[in-house]
Length: 198
Picture 1 (cartoon, helix red, strand yellow):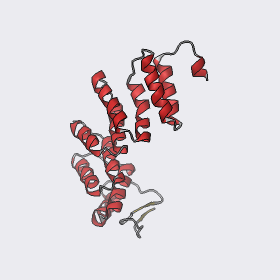
Picture 2 (tube, rainbow, N blue to C red):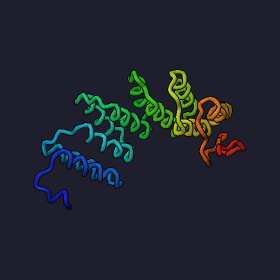
Picture 3 (cartoon, one colour):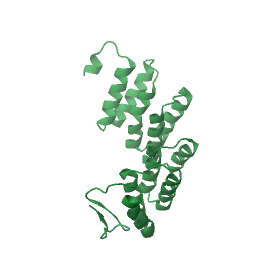
């Protein structure tokens, strides 16, 4: 109501409203407002796209995500967080091919990108691919955290990769120096075993 009653609205105001819709499970309203923003002559910036990316994931719309990605490329936005968010959205939309292509085209891969790639493979039950990306990350000397460890264990557990899962589980504290948290558990292909992190 406040937004509709405003006489003058700058891009920041539009971005905030798109984000409000996105964060309150109103993806269609967020997309409509985005198109309305452009009709009013506003030029979307990196923040606008960042606000719209969760909507792409909510709607599982690879088409909308590709539009956002193309716009980012055309506008020459060089925001590392934005690229990581696009990558994460591709993974959440189940478009592992697009995610992998973006992953491969990024020269400096950080922990966030590796985590998104492993998490994307884990969601789709592609355990061997998740372990491959995780192993490649370790070879590059990127230190894992509890988030990616959980993702790769989940990928192994849902793909029946018991040996790989146990090996990664045993390396958590011994090799990576990560203090296990209460409740974290080795899945052992879907059924919790006696190896518990607590």
